[in-house]
Image (tube, rainbow, N blue to C red; front, top):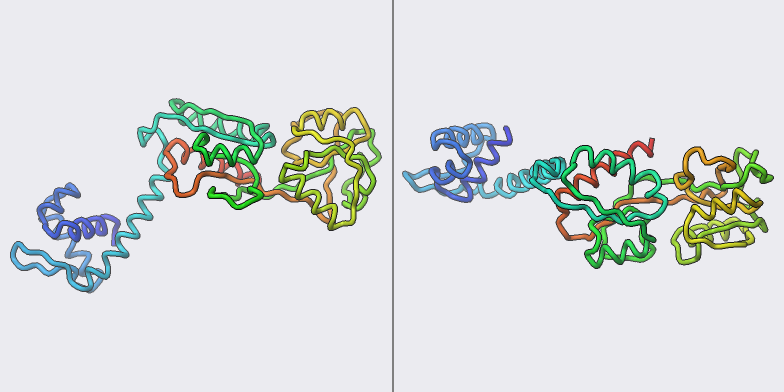
Length: 297
């Protein structure tokens, strides 16, 4: 059985007229008739009753129709997801909201690959806090977001991309700089700079502190990672951030893995559920998925 057999069958089932169905699938009437007979022989059931010019579906044909339509719908959906935006004639724009962490490396990597393939699509990237990305997606002001799972239930679809461990970042002169690993409890009463409390990451870290009985001294709160790292490089204050948030080759900093427990975040794609994703946005999402797969390895 081939895909064309299903397409011919569904066309005839909808028209119940060989001439009209043949025109719909762009073949001759004799070709359509021959292909339907092939399908019936393979299935071992008569799908249509033919009485002169009159065509009616048999009980077997009516039963098979729903499965054939479902199969074709899935195949067509898969083809549409894989088809390049330019092939769809989709010349438009993609509006992306990303948190700072992903705007450092993941977004530039994905955009370089995407724009090389789709030079006619215009891309707009905004660096936003996760809660603002959620609000802008709800308002229809963004097409897709790259952030962490929302803290509260929303009407957005969240597709996890990978899991990332957060690390302790210290200056090369810090007492922990030479450590290969550090337990969470060892941060008890140690000075830290962290994201403010309205970030989901801060909530997750507070849960880790509580689980290990740790009470660090929060000497500063900063809403972006860059100034946090600047403070860390100049003082004995440490920070807990994603390893991906530290620019490659940044001198004077050491990254130390944390255990017992290890803080873990799950970034993913966010978009409005129930709203068809335009072709340029689908193509960008595919690039993000491929690049995220590399980070899982």
